[in-house]
Length: 434
Ligand SMILES: Cc1ncc(COP(=O)(O)O)c(C=O)c1O
Image (cartoon, rainbow, N blue to C red):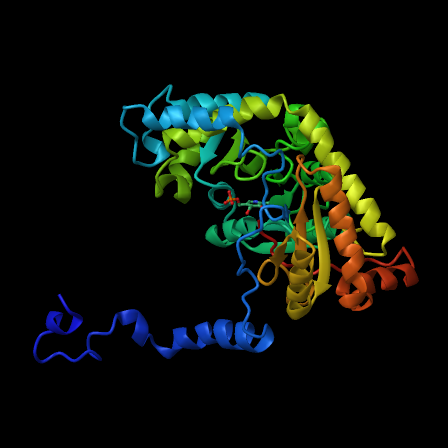
């Protein structure tokens, strides 16, 4: 049927336009800020995340599959076997899962591996963090967030209608000051920060939490699988498992799946499932997703060789980029930030790297502060010596071309070397994600 014949005789095409094309100006103005002010005027019409298909021989550094699990045949078969099973799925929220379900069994195995009594699988790391903070905080329970804590943790504070109190990145003295001012609450950090690969001072955070009578939540999304004994995370590596109240993680990083996890007690789990809005009002994971995660867990436990390779690659790239004068000193692990600063400079950096066959991910507002956008190079265990060399050579080649002396990270390094070490370093909130 033609469009015209679908219209009644008195209707015009104008009247039949979909509602979305006639939106009020309070929306169109916001959309114009994105399409006109940012994409057209600031970035010359190029979207920061619009990619051409990556060439087969590219060095791809934009994914979080740290241990290269995605291509593993045994994981794929485990998932396939679950897909072809004939039993029906529970297309409901996890509250309705029966005792002894595959999800409960996997929760027990994950918890045991992490040294916890129990745990909850959630639909994503986002759902884990929002749901957890929402069930613990409230208008009279402040949430202390590292300025670089993941956006989902900030969202949790908002969801709980709790005061969100930021503290300077990894700055224990500032956190102590904030605690003294606002009283006990929730202290919320990432174990390994997602934009620059910096590591939280977990031992000091535990002490502050204990001294102030606060709860400590550690998001291990970027360290679970990659750090600690059998990959059980940084908290486990430091022997702090019993002193951290909750650990959360996205299982879309080293597990290469789609889910989130919270380590907790069995008693808390029962409370969480009845109080967390993402748990109650959103459906649970599917059987084939659980099958992937169960197979991934066994794989990860045995993956000491891949973990060692990943850490070695991080040291190699970091030390060579440092020798080139690039400031990667904000972090120490497998996530490496090349911080050009302003978005047009960062877009140019991303494209220059691509011309050298290296594909990183551009991170900009709201994942970073507006003037601190960066290209994130995410290393993985499978990189070859030639690929590592290619990364270093690409960075070497593009420095002059891109005026790296004027990048925000280079200027910061220069300032730091001039400023006395006793002065505090100010880090602004960027609500980093992914
Ligand atoms: C530190 C951190 N926490 C939570 C999340 C959210 O995880 P997911 O992608 O599984 O929702 C991410 C990833 O985006 C992350 O980097």
